Image (cartoon, rainbow, N blue to C red):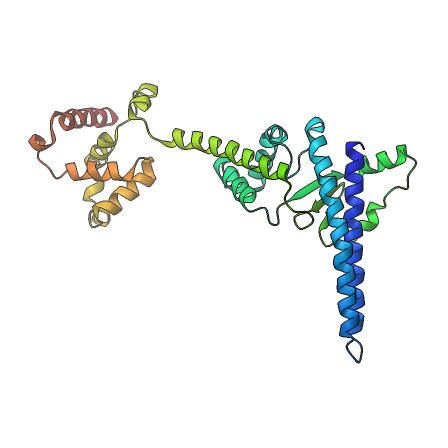
Length: 295
């Protein structure tokens, strides 16, 4: 069975599940709307539905395993695809996420992916192209699928299949139990994403020596605090009445430095030069020279 044939069979099986669910619900609703409730008839309908669903869900597991095996060579992304396919689609999916979520960065995308992989209850989707399915059917002299009818809002059978202009999406979360292959590849994806997240965290750790080497004109935390003090920021009544913790947090938001280091530098302003050391005197001289140039 070819890859696209597997997608077609999976779609038809999902439509069959939809129809079974819909017809069963209609029969039960008709009984409940009658003058007398026939609970035995309702019980029989439910038993037949469960028996039918059991067989269909078993077939869905087989088809999903086929799609998983063939998705590697086809580079076809879906929730349970192999790790290599996931890696190949990472950048494209990240860019789409950032486009839809303007205030987010790559770290947010990674965290969202990790949440979905750890809790995939409702996230297992597989998306297919209408034209690919019908091209396959046409080549094999089979009846084409009327996707316009399926995506019509009046067609109410689709409880877990959605359609847009050219694509259909099946949420197969409740169809088949987790396959061993998909569980394994989920763990691989989680490891892949965690490694990416670790790299971001390392970049976020401030390295003063490296920062100074990259930008020798960049002021240190102590120099920034002295600069603000010389400009009269700490003498401002509104700012002066704040606690040193709040002052540090406010300045941290402004300059992007660690608030604890800023608080330590603020506390030095109240100490005598002899208690602070020569480093403070050098920083003070540098800032005074810098201010003189600005005048």
